[in-house]
Figure 1 (tube, rainbow, N blue to C red):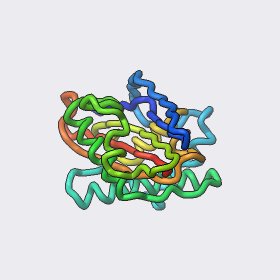
Figure 2 (tube, rainbow, N blue to C red):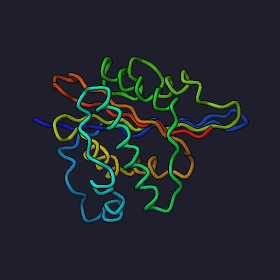
Figure 3 (cartoon, rainbow, N blue to C red):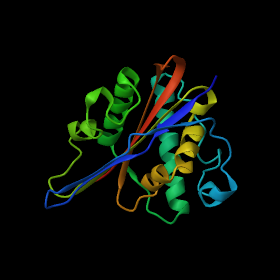
Figure 4 (tube, one colour):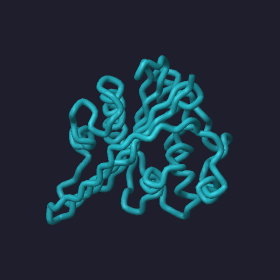
Amino acid sequence: MTELAFLSPASRVAKRSSLALVLLVAAAALVPGAGPLRPDEAQAAKLIAPAMTCPNRQAGGGAVAMKKARRSMICMVNYARRKKGLRQYRTRRKLTWSAGHKARDILRCGFSHQACGRPFDYWIRKSRYLGRGGWSTGENIAWGSGRLGNVRAIFIAWMKSKGHREAILSGTFTDVGAGVVRGRFEGTTGARIWVLHFGDN
């Protein structure tokens, strides 16, 4: 059995006045399959990179395979942005670090933006990514098993979701980091948990 699930994206914005706007939607959405995009999603379909541009990595578990999978996910994100006429996100080590830690929290504690009882941006803050002035952060999370856990399936699922797609194509964020872990999750062996952390500092 293959499964795929994701949550509505989370985002946080702090202005120089130090006022904060928090957007957190905690309703889970279980998707039966990534499959082709529906006709009404034709515009989003044009933003999906071909396999020869961004290889469809499986995130097999080894360090090298995981690194290649993360790079492929960032490739998918930036291909979509280029096709939309947007500037590419810069890959930031601190956001890659925070996304990886968040993925491990989800594996250990459950599928939530607040995994292990922590705010969604806990690891972004721990990474010291945030600047002293204004900043914004966001997060996409998903998990899948079998073929639905690979880069392309996860990315297509995000692009099918308005909120996740908006984070990927945001004009607010400038930076990104991807994290992925593999393990037994919710009774499923070989599940892959994916996290994208977005930011602007």
